[in-house]
Image 1 (spheres, rainbow, N blue to C red):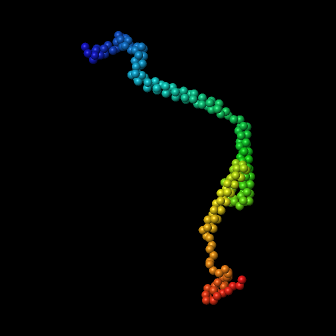
Image 2: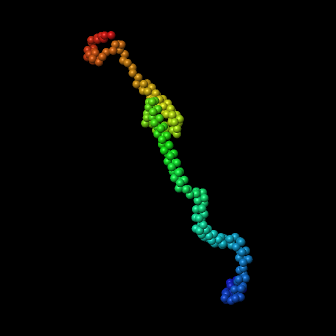
Image 3: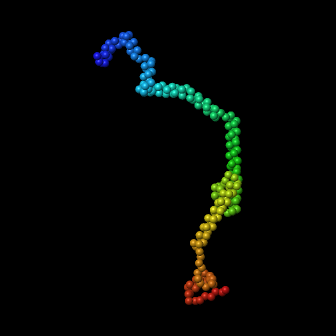
Length: 193
């Protein structure tokens, strides 16, 4: 008898109690557990386990996570008293006013120094430092650079356009005399010394 023939014979008894008892004896807890411990059993069950875990995790997140996060945020950043918030705002405003006042004073002093030293006043805002010492140091650096730059420009200009006097007699003549001499080159003009 072949296996197919055996299966056909068993199909005839499918609805009987004897058949059901025989099949339930083949599948029991120990045999299912042993099969699930094999690699093919694990491959079969892992997707189902993953889906159950994912569903459970999502349910836990929706029920508990917001509450835990809010508690931790309150622990790390407790709500401030309105008085403390207002006090912090007043302190910040006071610091801002002090900073603006200091900057105004430093700007006025820097303008005075720049005017005294003959530096361009338009650039004073760029030299204002954190305090008076830093501002003075910045102005001194600018003064040195400005003076060096102006000095080198003047020297270059003097070298480029040096005046060479004409070679003639040492007596200066005025414009009228020079025009007369130009019109009458044959006449020798003498100037009074």
